[in-house]
Image 1: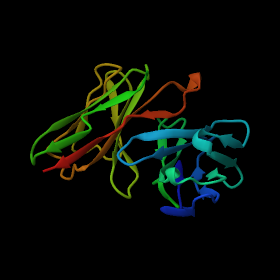
Image 2: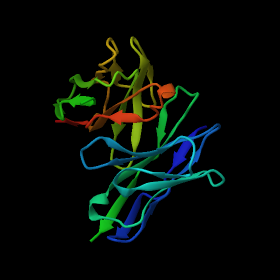
Image 3: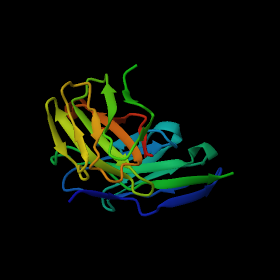
Image 4: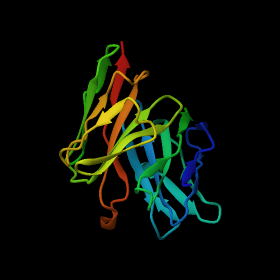
Length: 114
Length: 115
């Protein structure tokens, strides 16, 4: 079965430090991977996606993610965290062939400490 | 600007009452989805529709109903059979992957509270 896992419920990072939010996935074919961010009482906003090509994907607000096929991971990263990055982050995989739906992880709450 | 509009932003329901949440998109997307979000539980799929006049149950469809009479609209009704409807409800839409449109676009959500 297709799935995506975010092993950390919460990540705390000091402002200015690099941040990583972890994501692993399981799919039967080629993965279509996404990161979304959610601010309080708002919908999810698209950050970045990996469909094919370069393993390092750059997205909005200075975020990037590294696709690692051998480790089936798609970790979200940022070189220098801002307090405004504090939010709920969702990793997702599009399940091509099974009604083509996107499967979301449970989310990781990121706290950037000033 | 294209996007998804959910209304109302806040909704209060009395016990035993049906309420309908609106979701409208002007992105010309074929597929639309309803999710329920509870604290610490991520997103759970309620219903989805990939084409007009057709829809499928998601993981937690009991106590909910939908219709898809127009491409732009996918309203969700929370019925009195839903025993714990207090939650944040998100609508999303998706285009056709052959055009490279692989992701979802989300509305800003409706917070439903039972009073």
